[in-house]
Image 1 (cartoon, rainbow, N blue to C red):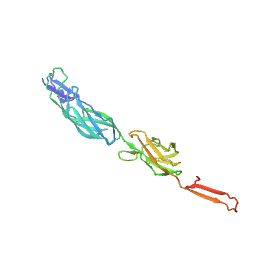
Image 2: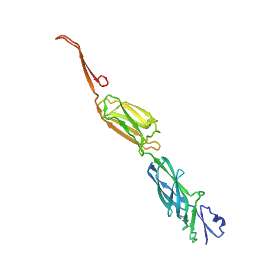
Image 3: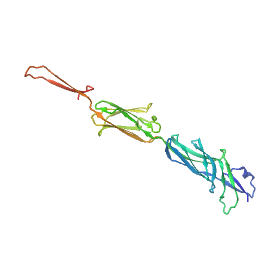
Image 4: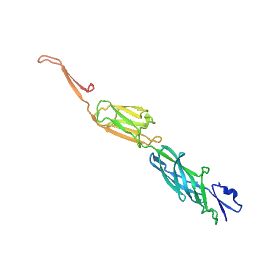
Length: 275
């Protein structure tokens, strides 16, 4: 017997099919599987199958788009495909595979003992057929926290550390955060030092001021918890401390032999503070 072919029930042949003609409608399903999460600039792998309701395979071309933007044309062979694209857009990527031109060889009709030779269905999608599938990928940005501070520091002198949160892939400073997003702790030994922290959103810089109290090393810790597309990061910097220079002055009153005199000894640091 004769067979008539159609994709998803759309074909001019259906209108002219004779009463004794067996019509086969191929309802193609496009499956799409992509990485759940990748870092920006990494490669996203997209794979899947294109089969109809009876397992007949599509072979041909398809368009790969991300958030509606065309990325590349991919090949589908015997109902399967796999391809890649670089992740350049942080955040949610809606990955869609849409069939364009190809064919389906009908080997199984789903009708028991059907010996009809349906042949090959030609697919030429001008965009009017919904022959697509999609998946989502979350693209993240790895971060790091550079800490800049003089080394060594001087005991009893105010020190300043500069801290930024940066994009690890290109080194740019991340500015769309708040002061509370980075937790900064300054310690000397086991003692946490009082620190004044200011954040400049225009430059993305944290300015940390503190004063070492002893000659023990100072440790500065900065921690960023994951937020939005940005991954968590942490950094520790340990710096040495040297003693501040001091001076001694001695003064007294003149007196006679065997007399007494008051002698004053003053010990001060380089900042004229008494020690």
